[in-house]
Length: 142
Image 1 (cartoon, helix red, strand yellow):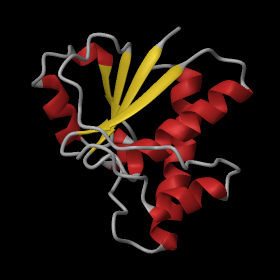
Image 2 (cartoon, rainbow, N blue to C red):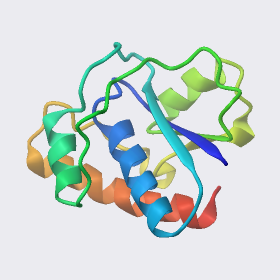
Image 3 (cartoon, rainbow, N blue to C red):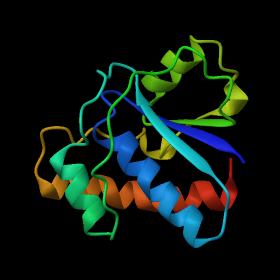
Image 4 (cartoon, rainbow, N blue to C red):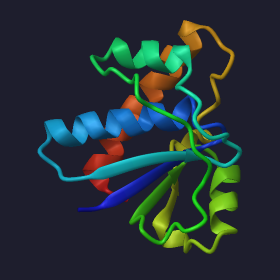
């Protein structure tokens, strides 16, 4: 089964949001896929942000069990690593991941801005972008 990793900064907003959307959409399409998330500057064990939890709940996804984690030192077990910005991708590349296994989500838009600390409207805007990207990533598998 393919394994993907989704990476942002703190692993409480964007990466858990996209990971949950990818899991939901893959399951609905009957695709076997494991999706994890991590952060380049994440602490260990923080819950997903309230805005992320609410944006997912509006989509029928309950995310009560998420706990943040830092980027693993060994990334060899992941077939694809999707980063929220080019800075995240640079951090992952510095760990020796070849460029063909890396991608920046919404790269044509400069990545995905961090809604951390924003209101529900900012989280909803982020969720809409990530929902669209989840469909694209699963369809193209780039």
